[in-house]
Length: 267
Length: 216
Image (cartoon, rainbow over all chains, first blue to last red; front, side, top):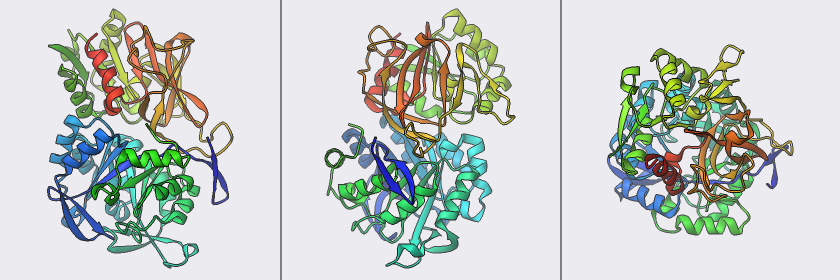
């Protein structure tokens, strides 16, 4: 195992999990740019099955409009996925209560991602962790730079798909959430999301130095080198969307490139 | 059709386990009560979450003694994740500070995964991800074991914050390294098998293990 340095703390560079992120609106896979301007791409299950057959390590379904409308449409898709895709699945979007989490778990999700409702009521993190285990409770954090040019100014947590700012400092929020029972952090850069021009590596370095639980780097992966950068920053996993959906890369091709860069992957 | 009974005590990813068993040709029965458990040909004890909570769920359903009795009679039993950990005698994962007793079918205990790797660097816990298996218990490979389909190095999906420490060397079937620690990945004694990883979530190598259990 190689060692990297992040925020002064020596951290082990983990084998990286490659996660296909599938944003869902109604029954369609969609992809937005910085969460705006959604484009319909097709049946999410078709994409999920294709990535599974290509060797993706995990799936992440996010209902992109659920928290706006206070509902989640993923149950049908999860039920179909659980019949022929045998890898871990995380589901999120509009989870407001332990009962909402339970509905997704019963439909076939292994973990639930929570953002907006946890910010409104942090006790929800503890309720979900107590009821289903902290390994089920993924805190989704949408991080936006306070100063686009200067990562030293820090990041603020956003909710409602990067629309609403919360005033919470991302590092403080992550530390508080893991103490409350979050078992994993899905960390999305609002600035980079869907742009495909690279990831906010200083964000992952800063958060991984403070987090005790695994961090999933998301937002802006445009090539294998971006994912390698996230791994070196201390991320345990990277979520990839557009890169796969638009056929700019295959799962096997990405893993091959990562291995050549010295980043361990599942083969 | 081969029938597998899955113990349903409200703390598991029941649907995923069920789908994997069905994919492998099993007829799945769910058992919530001792009466539903009686007569089962094969048992699966799934489980996610905290140890004390899992044992409390089994106790509340009156399933602790029936599971022990059936396992001791030789009914094949597969424990998955928390379901494997509960096969052991006790766990440090408890709300009271005192160790929480388990089913006691495999001697040994369950302890927290160290938060540092063997080089002293910070290690994220829980351990989440795909890890390669190595044979344990003095074995050179998995031939002649329930893991005969596994090649050393095949990767399986783990998600756990605690790990099992079986007391008898030969009960440890496999280990998987995390941060340099050789964590117990599977236990095996007679007709009792436990996997710390999720075979139902480990793609083709996992389904091969599920198939082997269905075909027993």
